[in-house]
Image (cartoon, rainbow, N blue to C red; front, side, top):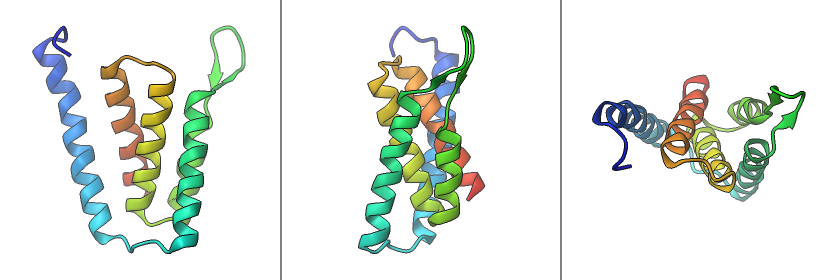
Length: 120
């Protein structure tokens, strides 16, 4: 990240700080999941990785990504803190597997986790 300007670093650091605060706040209010819910959360995280890694090609310039559907289902099924973790970790792993640049991975992961946190 040394080649990125200071203003861009601040632009990337702000969502990361907000995401960390939202994640900690929602996890503090969440209940510890039991084994069944934990396994279901891991499965949803895997679905999130697949949805981010393999968008559906609709045309030359269009892609359909189903990761918002996975986030919506996770928000309905889990406590907000668990939904934030599912969205954030799944998005992070999916972006890394797609070999995106580091700054884009950070921003997209924060955006996805905040989306789940605010929806929850």
